[in-house]
Length: 123
Image (tube, rainbow, N blue to C red):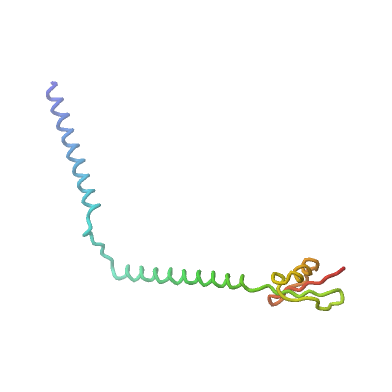
């Protein structure tokens, strides 16, 4: 009885070993196959080309928007400051003119129109 049990175990072990070897060989062949060709229909190729074109245009649009935002940020700020009698006492860019910057800090904000900000000093 012992010998039949041993023979069954040996046979089963041999079958499992052969199955594992086959699986390993098939996976290795599939991984190393450099000649595996992928066939694409004309419709699929046209669809892929359309997607590529769309995403290339989308990337260009994003880059254009970023450039426009940078240009808008580079536009210098222009302000006009008026006194209590509504007389213009200073205008220009407060970043480049420290005196104008002090006037803007003292003044009250009135409005903004056409990229120009208006302030009035009320004492």
